[in-house]
Amino acid sequence: MSDKNNKRKQRAVSEKSRSSQARLDDLEPPKIYRQDQVSSRQTKTQTRRRQNKKRRLKNSVRRALIIAAFAVALAAAGTAVCITAFCKVETVTAAGSEMYSQQQIVDASGISSAVNLVLLDKEETAAKIERSLPYIGSVDIKKVFPNTVEITAQDTRAAYSVENTDGTYTLLAPDFKVLEGASAQNPADTVIISNAQIKSAQNGLQAEFADKAQQERLSAIAKAIENANMTQATELYSKSVNENYVVYMGRITFKLGTVDNIDEKILRGLASCERIDESGSNISGTLDLTVDKQSYFTAE
Image 1 (spheres, rainbow, N blue to C red):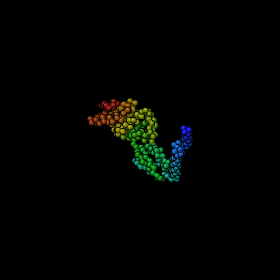
Image 2 (cartoon, rainbow, N blue to C red):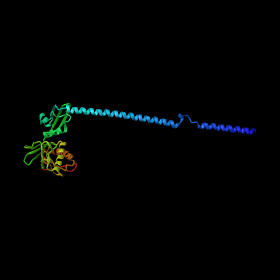
Image 3 (tube, one colour):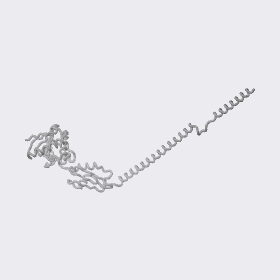
Image 4 (cartoon, rainbow, N blue to C red):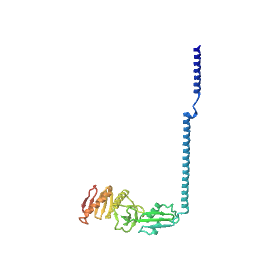
């Protein structure tokens, strides 16, 4: 009897324990301790922060664009007002030339009170002066706002001459710009270009030779003469690609061969002439410069 009572008590205690455990299992922890909800709240907060940051950035960019557009519009309006209402040329000055007067240069520029300073094309105006006044070699134009133009001109000189079929001479600047297409006299200090014919010689423009390839070779020789400051040159000519010549003081002919390394050949020829002249100032002959770094003189 006692054993049965004990067993019933044990079963009752066991059932009560299981019932209590079941009730505990049914209970959920407070929501604040659930990891998935904590993560979800953090993610939503971060998303809102990112969205707010992007919104502020867009607003800043929009304001900057509006300000920039306003500044451009204001500048454009100012320029338009300047072009239409102000900046009309009132004063034009010219200086630097000994060949032409200030008034001649101003007239050749074509600048008048109807010209707007902002719209004035400096390069076109300079080219117009150089064409109209051939002995002007270069022109610099400066705009001085609100209404002044300053012109500074530099003269060029007759450096080369070519005899025409009628006995007159075409005078050329160092860059072969035509200074006078039919001069009655050949200035004594010009270098004669022989064995060549000019096809077109319009004052203020570049000369056009009948043989374009020959003109390119002559231009290369002339440039080398200018670079070396060879004031003793009296004549130059080109017969073919391999036959190009410069005459020194009317008595020593530089045989150049091709125009390759022409600057070095001219300098080497001048150095050789200094040594030759030490033996006598009237020596004539041919100086062969066709071999690199070598000079061979043959006296007449």
